[in-house]
Image 1 (cartoon, rainbow, N blue to C red):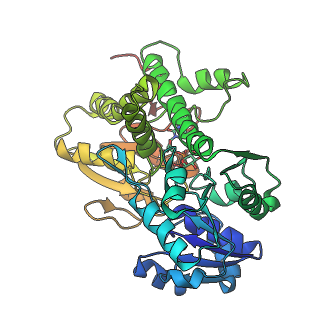
Image 2: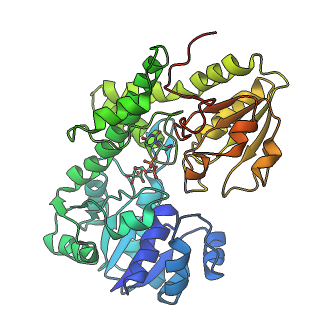
Length: 407
Ligand code: UGA
């Protein structure tokens, strides 16, 4: 098929590459000329395991351009542009502009919105351009994006036009995944409800972690394990830590609350989820202060900068929030990250040994390589804020959600 992908951020680039890998010709459009130049030169500006390999093999079937007219003749245009929140409210202008541009370039192309948008957006845009638009929300996770796109747990397609919905379904037939066809509004809400629910699981376990810290013998990881053995609860997304970050959960939970508020609905659970999440870094600072005392002049090594493992994405990274708070309190920071080697305002070391002898090592991201390290044995104090360190190997490490009796 000839397919167009609009917006070459994380979702767009992964979608375009995987679809090219399945033999489709993909016109990749972004208004940012710098991105287009980079991609033409084979430079993928995101780190995602496995992506460069598929990209290299299939670049020949991909066109990179900022010129919408090149999408002419495409059967489907997937809209993957950002939907940031401004003052807590979703900004739909990129989605609107790209839908209008696709419509001007080729009115026959089926338009499928992958961007996360509030319920009613596809219907509103359908009315604007006098043509049915469909929804095809994306559920991939950064760091796991290739597998999530090749074998998603479900494909959700919303819309009014059965023929167009069938066409979208055909594109994803190779996944063999179950397909839910529904209204645009349901599809749009499924995406928000899913992200808000997952974020709620995280805030919930983080509150249980707070409780574990004051109960002798308690460890939140084992509590989560026992909870997860009940399939009604499920074991995933119950890892306690310094809270959720990234480009999705923080923005989507806020947008959902604001959207509901506008309609007169008070989303109390989602609001609390956001509140609990906001308090996580302060909680982490308290833990560090308990270990090292006054932070002025103290040297702290931070392991992990991105918002989670297997990505170089720094958006809404709790690790960066932590670094800023520590700096404001007078601490001297050095950081190590498996993939981020340069960052304005942060001294990044290339080898972990360069953090030897510092006052405290703080694990702030869940990379597998942080499970064990000789650094933990040599450090004065070690704090694990992501429940990633193997405490059987390193019993000297203080972890979030584990009882540590007061001295
Ligand atoms: C999330 C969803 O998981 C995807 O399904 C969705 O498609 C995506 O948002 C989106 O809306 O585009 P992502 O933001 O890539 O994916 O990352 P997650 O793996 O969900 O992690 C989000 C944050 O939660 C990270 O900061 C992570 O460290 C934290 N987290 C996750 C926890 O603190 N505990 C957990 O148990 C799981």
